[in-house]
Structure formats: C-alpha cells, structure tokens
Image (cartoon, rainbow, N blue to C red; front, side, top):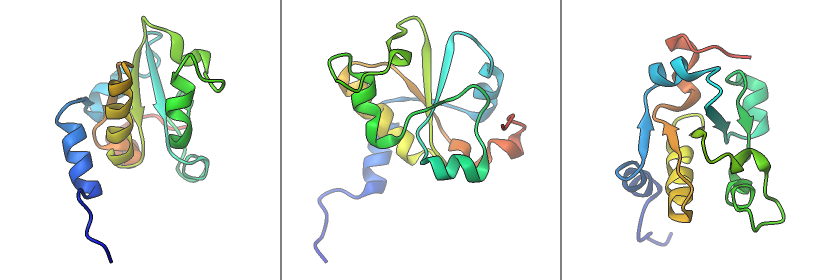
Length: 128
C-alpha cells in the first residue's frame, strides 16, 4: 500500500483548526431559529436509519460544492440566503469539518456541529 502524504485524520484536524465548530447544546438551542439553516450531509440511508434534526436540509456530501455555487447548474436556492447562518453536520463531525473548510475556501461562510449527529439524541436534541 502506498503511503499517503496526508491522512484523513490530519485533514480533519487541519480543517477544524480554521473553521467554526458548534457544540451540540448550542445547536439544540438554535433548532427552529428562522435565521439558522441546519444542513445534514449524511447519506440518505443514515438519515432513514437514525432520524434527522427537525427542519434540517438534506444535502448529500457529494453535491455540496455544486449546490452552493450560484454558477453551477445544480445550485439550490436554499444556499443563497446571505442573512442566514449555516451549520452543517454529519454523523461524527469529520465529513462536516472537511465540507465547511472547502466551502470556506469557496467564500461560503458556515459552521459545523463538532460532535456530529452521533450524540445529538442523548444530549436532548430533537429527532424526526
């Protein structure tokens, strides 16, 4: 097996050092806030298996850059609300950290749920 120049764990660590991370309790308090858009980047099967944060937008990880880019044929209007705060999440916080770092490089401001959805319910977060 070829040695990698950078591991996935190193990429996540680097991303986390330069993005805004939101603790679970803080995001729980934001659920239902009309100025916050919670974006779930997990696979649809993960959402079906474990539920979702009420009102969250599902945006598969593989399409984020295209859905956010207004010049892309795949652009989604939900990402064009400049006055909104966007908080992305995945299951454990790894994919969402990489996603938010990439979006930040594109000029799209967002934060991510530090621990991901894995501890959401046990910390009192609502699930639908």
